Length: 440
Image 1 (cartoon, helix red, strand yellow):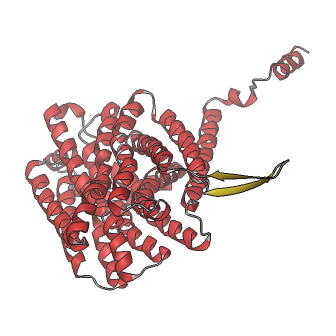
Image 2 (image 1 turned 90 degrees about the horizontal axis):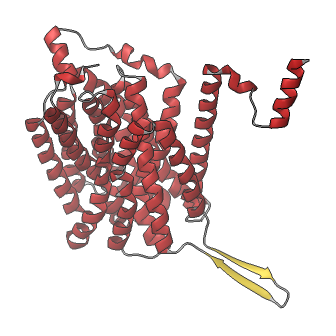
Image 3 (image 1 turned 180 degrees about the vertical axis):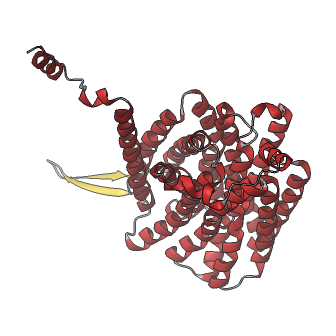
């Protein structure tokens, strides 16, 4: 790992903000189907499952290539790999307008998904510019590029309503190509790559990069990210459709309200990074999972009518979450998911400083796969269960499992480091009995 004193603060800030801007544009492209997919669904007459697969397909590519791109960023430098990823995604997004059938849209969406691979490249690149005690904040700021999803939700509906979804894809492709050029012109090679070239040291082999992936801890981090990031992406894609279906909103209004989720779930990632540096990532994760479990439980409750047999007759009750409470709950959910996204990636440079690319890549890959799998699952649940809120039921199960695994893993680690914990209890009568038996 590089020494932090060999780079200036100005160089650190340049690397961080250029990467954040580039990732924002990449994320806007990566989630483009959350808006244009609504019009394509109507155009092709797709069912819920087909729609879920369509909007999730770009997420699949962006997830699967994260591991490889993270390793390449460590080996060849994030500057080159980042620019190449953006150019490839820009070309794919431009070609999207030539698709006409559902299979063609799926293939096009696979290549558009290359934009999502930029995340693991950026994590490997940005982390090398900062010392350990500032990496949480730096990566939190970089990760705030998730706000690109909100950019798409706010701007794409206006363009699509005025001129159709094809113009949206053209504009987003041009923006990404220009961003690639600007990033390459104004960014610098990361310090560790410069040092390695100067000393003639060969990059770490692929096999060495993959060694940490044998640790169960890496996969536990991956499950956390499957919820906080995969769940975020899935809802960012699904909410416009959910809002138009449940509350009968037009696509513009649905996009604006969907942004009420995407914006806090992105920008407050910076706060998560700062808190992870100051109070510890573990504490932030407890808050994330605890509040998220409450929010998803409330959101999962379906629109219900009850008839109670009263003393003087039937009493009708109607329980449903209105659009305003719904917006508030998803805002809170997005806020705490954003804290969790930063907290997960705070762990990686600390536990695996020499393998940020590979470990960050696999965690990002699993998280991204959540963004692919969950929208499809949401669509299947709608078709099979027939309840709109079934998507939040699934998220509740996922966050509850994550919280349980984290808590028991931490308790097991504490008992390993402090064996006396296992024999202690907070019940005074038991403690007195143990003390009495010792005296005898």
